[in-house]
Image (cartoon, rainbow, N blue to C red; front, side, top):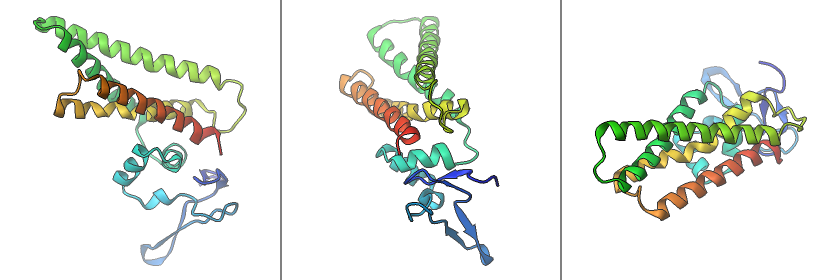
Length: 194
């Protein structure tokens, strides 16, 4: 384990470990030397509780996921989030056209997916350009891609639109976009503001 590999989710102090393992498989969470809080309480949380804290927009949950979590396939999540966004756009367009042919509906979905992927790429390039002059250790390309991917997790709310037929409701669409915007702001705050 490399020194300074982990970050305290409270004060962003670099730490060597998140916990210590003792005999019998017992663990003890590491205390931060700077703020005296537990370095990362989310280490012992179930993923469902982490997701709930992400929905509640807790910066500590974002820092855990961005800086301390291991083995998260963010590239797969990015594809899922883009597909969810494309499906949401496709459902909205489909509701506006009554008798579309199957080929036209399929082509429209591909257009929506291309639009979603282009929006994500544009957002990434804008964030990269805005952060270009920052000389912080958190400014790596991988972290930038990961943080942008995490900000789009609100796109999975399309499942709610499927269950309750909300895709044509302006309130659902506005709240989803507002949630995604707030998520992106929180992700950037978790990286750069201590």
